[in-house]
Image (cartoon, rainbow, N blue to C red; front, side):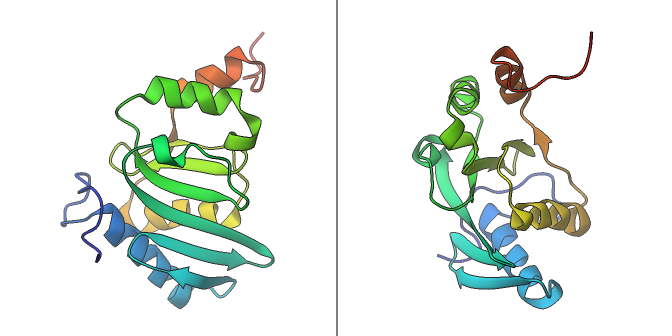
Length: 157
């Protein structure tokens, strides 16, 4: 598998896939970020360390189902959130071990479901902004689920 792995991304003027984006971020980590070390890399995953914090990014083909397992290290999964978004967002809002260890990112929709603390994930979002001029937004369905459970308060009233 090469950089052509994963879905095609429509917001880019150039031909781009999820795999190519992951590969470009790995190169960015190696070449541009003195405080991030690439520990492992393949066409579908990247393990990187910032200080003593190790995080994993992985491309999961298709819907988010296989990503819905708590992990021992912070894991950002590039997935398709289109199908079953409400159910996935509901599950993340309801399960603390899942939402604190797994972040879901849909690069096609530019949407994320995440409360994971990881500096590498922050660097990934900055990379998307700087390299491609795009920003990830939190899924409204996830935000609604967090509010409904009292995990998030927007400070109104």
